[in-house]
Image (cartoon, rainbow, N blue to C red; front, top):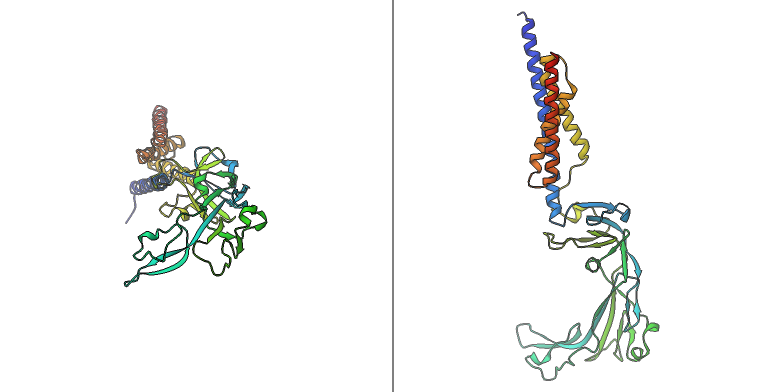
Length: 348
């Protein structure tokens, strides 16, 4: 069977058309996948207050006020908290005083109630016992539990707002310092293990004895996500998750902190440029069979037009600002492609 030149030309034309169509489709598909990934990530981020600028340990250097930011680093206490009443202090973000009283409490185990003495952190009203006689509790505590915040706490250069400060995890009992205790309290309390206790015999407390302890949030490496308000990290307003911030121990990635957050696509701009080049090369091949050469300006403009139109439509409703930029770019590219096509027609 003899091939005719006309047959070879037809096959060449079909191959160019097929290759061009495949390249245009590949370019548009790559752009669509990239933008879909970004849109999904943006929608997920909005649930937690907005897209997060990942600063790592760089802190204020690349911060943008008003933006959600992720910072990580060692908790730094600038002004340590002080319990003025007991004159107890610790280098910690938060110092909490716990007060307990040795009281009767009622135990119901299916039969007659039983009564036991134990440390309780709130007054127990014994008048409601089934058998209150012989089980009277003293009533209100003479000293109250309290929480004391450090004057200023930083992570990655940012000062933590009170809400985020109180979200710092962990706590460890600290041994009270009797030397710092005011004299009037020193006469009533003695140190037993990690407690101040009023018992004459701490190992055998009696009804009404008071026990005081202090718990300090440890200094540790944490990851904080919050909105930057100058050099202060605060919760984001009106976040769908009801918080607008998060605090985790250690150096944690965003996908670990927010499990529902999709992984954003990497190399966004290289992928966008590559998708346009693929579409442009495809357009060039689609028109090559007419002129035996590619017009670079027309091909590139048409590639931007095709990709820009698709991407612009995808962003409509999610971010109309981004959509407008892509649509304007597509319109400009359409005008350029039309002008170039007319110029080529005049040349011929």
